[in-house]
Image (cartoon, rainbow, N blue to C red; front, top):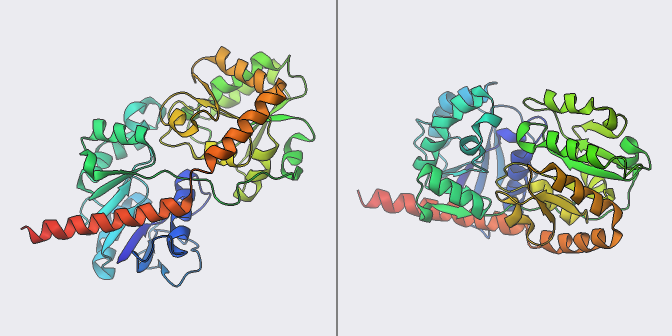
Length: 375
């Protein structure tokens, strides 16, 4: 089977979708698909780097700088020339006029559930396209049962066309004693950590307000925020102007993935109180590195964390601040959550994710052939 993969998220600074796509390609290229995929064709409107594998090929034809225009206007013509058996659209959208059968990854349904937390442009572009692309797909892939339920309920996709395939932390995410990356930002101070694009959905304004409640009782701690600015990040900057947070919060910006294991490993607590997540990859990464985790009791995050994290109502600042205080002052609790978190993270594997995704490709192609033969 020849499978085209939307690899546009591999260009530039990668976020969660980019890491998902990269790990999936690496897993299939390394043989986790058990021979289902003969060749992967990586499709992108911009130059990308690909893992070295005889079964992986970067398609360099038809480049165009604007992703939306490339996908809707250029890619359908390109697919007619290269003729893959199936395409995996890894980031919600597919060509409206494309004829090649496909599977599509829907990582979350925040656009439908929390539209006020997205830009007007994104809402206009995706509010009609995402439902259309999902309904036209042979199979829709989701990373959690929570997202599967949202897709089934909000998009009307039958349950037998949705396949839940969780994500995982990469093999480099493991406990490390290296303090150099943290020292570059906070010196030798103990710290709490947040990793993620700075945007309203991540709920960082409430998290910082919760930290402001406990700074007096945690006089040595810093709060390290890792992530590139997204939409409406100015609200976070305004929060940083609070007198009690002066000198206590460090905005590190975008950090290369190679530095993240050390930052996770050294944190007294990893705080990820997002308002909504389809999976929450940073939570699994933090757990794999032995960081005690505070995360939301909503969306997929409670499903993901199980009993291996301190679960909080993400809109309750008092609850958030108490969770921070307890973890930063109770070494026994930190050790217990670190142990449980490592065990929980070990239940997820990119090898299993790649194998299950390849099985979904086979199911999608079989569905396509059965439908063609019944006409």
